[in-house]
Amino acid sequence: MSSIETIDKEFDKRYDQYQKDFEKYLVNYVVPDIVAYQIAQSHYRNCLSRISLQRHYSVMSDIINIFPKLEVVKKDIIKILNIKYNLTIINEDPLIIDKWK
Image (cartoon, rainbow, N blue to C red; front, side):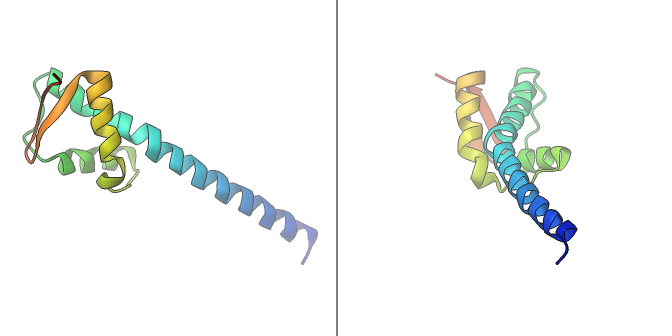
């Protein structure tokens, strides 16, 4: 194996780890915040579609091109809606939200 091949393999190993860490960051922090923001803004502007939470999530996943399962980020989305936007989910299908009390 040449030194260039060794360098390439080392780079690939480091880059792969970077990609995994970055994807984990996106799933843990960015995706839930984006989805909660979209739902909150739709609610406050009276344009929240009467579709399921799953469908809202699927639309946002398509837009941002990141596809973790809803179950992975759902708890964080709910928490962000409560804390940041003072909203709570009343029903998931169709999605109905209201001010958190």
